[in-house]
Image (cartoon, rainbow, N blue to C red; front, side, top):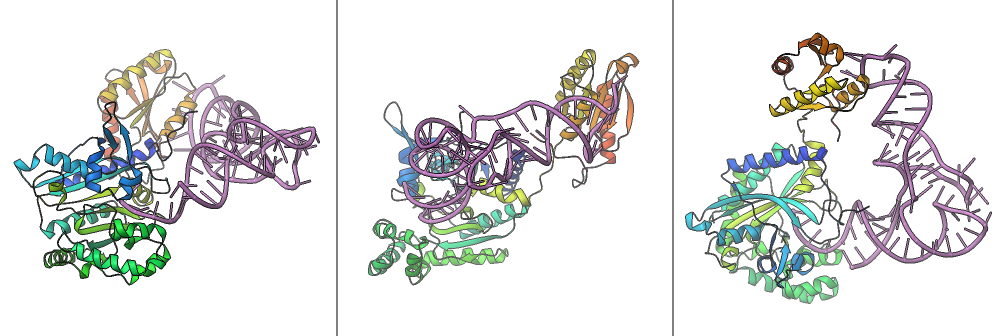
Length: 437
RNA sequence: GUGAGUGUAGCUCAGUUGGCAGAGCACCAGGUUGUGGCCCUGGUGGCCGUGGGUUCAAGUCCCAUCACUCACCCCA
């Protein structure tokens, strides 16, 4: 048997209803906030990610799927979406029409990590990026939008972690102070952190090795080193969140693994998913557009981890079920021929129809209709064809009605409409079993 | 990349000191000759992850390998 690749997975129809529900919720909400969808490629030049994410990040150092083309150019399966959206913003000159662009995108990302709960080598994200706005209101609005999103899905138990990473004006001073402090405490650091200390000292801050945490406890806080502008920005983000009653926690050791972040960084975490607790994360990247060869435009964005969100939503979010409106149970070849024609017509007209073309007993057909959760069954055999009528059974009330075969399609639609008027969409109190795949 | 755990029917799992591979659910059929769910009866379904070794005999013991799971690292 050929198996799928390690860390990859199939998402089966049973789960897709939930995925669609989540995606549609996001799209509707984000569009209410002025975001528009963009679709970007899954493959990009390796250089795009190296330059945006940063050479000394875990992602670039060891997690990217990178291949040479036949011409020898290195291309990479995107490990994240922001770089591509920025590339598109620049390449398509979206800024020329209007520097303010609010964009969202949904799709798979790829990172070659060891898989575990909530972490796959192909995983899905919803990304939102806002270009051309430097105001802290934008930061707060994005976070607000995220919290509304999770509320709509009835996801509870989330916590917003907030930090500011400063800017090129103030971060170096902090880095220096941190680096010096880490040098003094070399004895207590893990080997990984000793290596990182030189290349990317910020990363030592969120190391979970007990020894390192002990050291980090007494480390300087970046929020104490912010320059005046960054401090004011951070204060305004916090005040704005407060104004909208968004609870948050300032986490001075939240640094995030991508180099391009400036100022605001945030993560939305849960404690219900095991070790992989970040459901969404993002931050401001005011220098990235220019660094990748575009105009000097600020930007901020976030990514939602769909796989993890689906895990949470599995127990929390109600998804409307969509069982068939009607199942056609036909006995005998002549009846099956009719069933074929009617099911084609009903499907074309948007009536959710199931039919079984095999020659099985009525009992077996009824059983199948029941299992599929069909609201009605149309029963037709030689007797019915002779009489020019068929039987329409309401599976919930068990009521059966004769229905004329001439003009049967409009007859069926009328009956279904009447039944759903009497029994409007409720909160799933029917005893129809969940359809299986 | 590192560590631990688990691989037996479609699914969840039993399988004793090594001795004929099992249960529940699901599926199919019958009980009811043309009417679903509940009940009863029967049936289909297995390279016991794979390869090697020990043994008269291996699902069981040993070695290797692959896969999955969880955790570390890091993040969505």
